[in-house]
Length: 169
Image 1: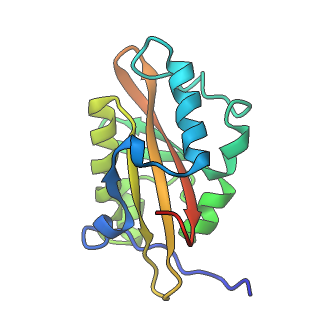
Image 2: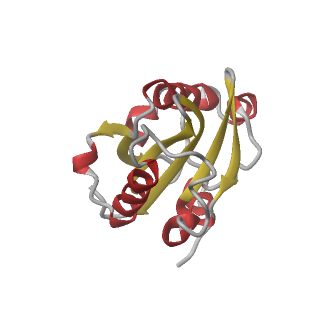
């Protein structure tokens, strides 16, 4: 039975359930491990690869699971949102910014801004695992990677890759 899902609720109260930090060696999703392998390969001897290096062709096997976020000073914008991410989160975030997310769910944009700032400041991948919290009882487990992209030491985009399941740990 394929019923419509309500949007995932992300705010300061639900953030820890939606995604708790895990070490990269605890990532079990083959999709995420492939994304991380490609990210590292493209980075080479740099800290992270550029946005231009992460082409759709390179991401073909997980493209539906990506969200590309452009960073702007103290704001961000969701630029690309894959179909699987839209279904998993119950809404399409394309072209949305912090204020729009906060208007939809108080605190949502602020939670995302903290995550993006942390990834940008460290310039390192962040792995999360948790449950996508909805108003109904059908909760999906997920693992996700936030991968920094940019030039030299400046992160200008973050590539989110998520994998959603009823059995992921």
